[in-house]
Image 1 (cartoon, helix red, strand yellow):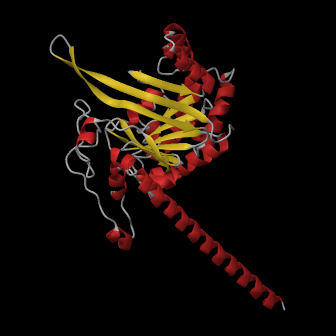
Image 2 (cartoon, rainbow, N blue to C red):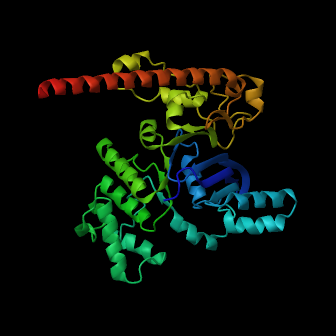
Image 3 (cartoon, rainbow, N blue to C red):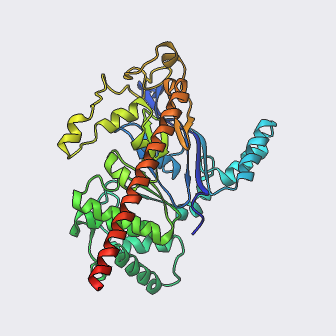
Length: 399
C-alpha cells in the first residue's frame, strides 16, 4: 500500500458543459454548465466525500474523471509525478504547445485519446447508484464479473478466472453457489455487493462510489458501508464517495468537498467541516441534518434558504450562491467569482465574506482547539483516576 498522504488524483479547473440545441437545424442555443471549474485532489488511501444538492454536478464530476464524459476543459492527473505536471505547465507558459499537448496525451486523462484509456480503466472503477441498472439482466453474476477479468487479461484460463470470481463473491459476502444466478434474483443490498465485487476484480487504486448506498435500507446501508471500509483497509483503496446524505458522508469520509451549482464551495477534513463549517451554503446544509435528540434539536438553529437553485443553463454572475445567500455582501458577491482560499489548516473555502473575516475565524478556531485540548486533558485525568481506583480496589480484594 502506498503511503497515506501522497496525492493520487489531482483535478484542476475541470469543466463539463453540455450543449443545448434549438430549432430544426439543431443550432447550439447555450450550454448547461454542469461542472464549472472544479479543483481538488485526493490523497492515496483516503476517502473524499463529495456532497451537495441534487443537480449540483457531483455525479457529472465523477463521470468526467473516469472519462464516461469527455471534459470540456481542465486537467485530470492520476498518479502522475509532480515533475511531469510542472513540465507540462512550463511548456505552455513558454508557448511550446506541441510538446505540452504530447505530454498531456500521455498523462492528462481529460486530453488522453480513448484508445489510451484502457490501462486507467483498471486503476479507476466506479460503483453506480442503481446496481440493477448497472448489471446486465441477461448475464449471470459470475459471467458479469468474469467478463471484466477477460477484457483486462486477468487469468489465462476460464478456470483461473472462475476461481477469482468465487473469491471476490466470498469477499463481499455472497455465497459461491449463487454464482449462476441472475441479478433479479438478488436483493438491492446483495446486488450492490456484486457491483463492488466487479469493481474490485481488476485491483483498482481508486473507486468512485456514486450514491452507492442511496437506494438501500438503513440496516443494509450500514452493512455496505462497513464492507467498503473493510475492503479499503485490506486493499489500500482510495474512494471518492458521492452522496447527498451528510450523515453517511461523515461516517465514511476523511475529507469532505461541498459542491453548489457546478462549483466547489468548501473542502475540509470531516471533523473540521462539522465542527466549524464556514461557507453559508455548508452551514445551511448541516442545519438540515436530522438530530434524534430532542433537546439538542430544539437548540439548533435551522437555516432555510430562500428561492430555488438557479438553472445551470443561466448561471448567475459572480458567486453562484449569492442570489440565495443570507450573508450576501452586495456588489462584490454579484460580480466577482470567489476562489478557493485556505482559511484554516487544510480547510479551503470560496466565499468573499469568509475571506474578509479570516483573521477573526482563525482566532475563533484557535480558541476552539484550546477548549478541545482542555476537555481531552480532563477526560484523560478522569480515566486515569478511574483506573487507579479500580486497581486499588483489586489490591484490597486480593488481601
